Length: 321
Image 1: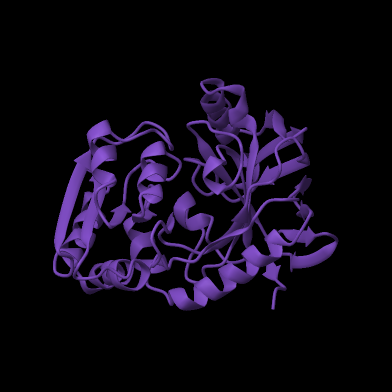
Image 2: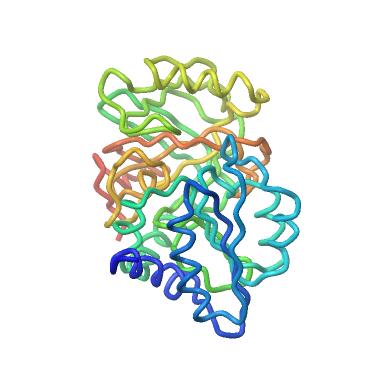
């Protein structure tokens, strides 16, 4: 294990999860993410009372449940990190384990380059900015997002609570992604109206070029039309296999990780400072009412964002004190 991989694993286990000698620790991984999973396990096993590493088959889609045996085991440990090809974030297995008090970090689709870049950061600094963004979202009734490339969408946030993805999972039941760094919220279902032009990345699209942007036309909180090239066709094929609720506008998020870079991996891309993301699909994990087995984030570059008419981001620069 080289020094940077070791350093990233140490930050994940020690700074982010605050693993203690008295605790039990579990890594859930698959063959596609085993190198990262094993690095984390190697650090954790030298700290925790007991450490476990479970290998599963790669899931087919984000939000697909792990095997029942793994879901049951997740309820019995204190701390879980899950570097897996597809996301376990929006699963009943993860939600149930969190409700039982496990501290959990998921790492869906993490690339080694992301692990050794965006994980080696000061998560106390990231946490502070994430909390300020979440507080601003919590206090707003209406959000508007606009870009020079065509995004212009309005949505209600009334009654919803902003969530800070700080990367510091020290309290029982704490959950988020690693690498971390965003403030996010579930807009009120049925309220989003306008156009989203995804010009960063979405799902498995990789970094999008100008001819590959995905345009989502939104009415009454649902995507009613999708335009674009190869990536748009991929998105339409995915949604064709899902229930209608999968077209729900599920999330508005703002990246806060200064070490993250746009690379085509959503896990890192959605954390990039200076970007926003709007997701479709499941929002049950963030205070919403839509429960479907899919959650796809669309990254928007250099947005301007207003909350109740006040500019909190202008052309990708955060204006939150």
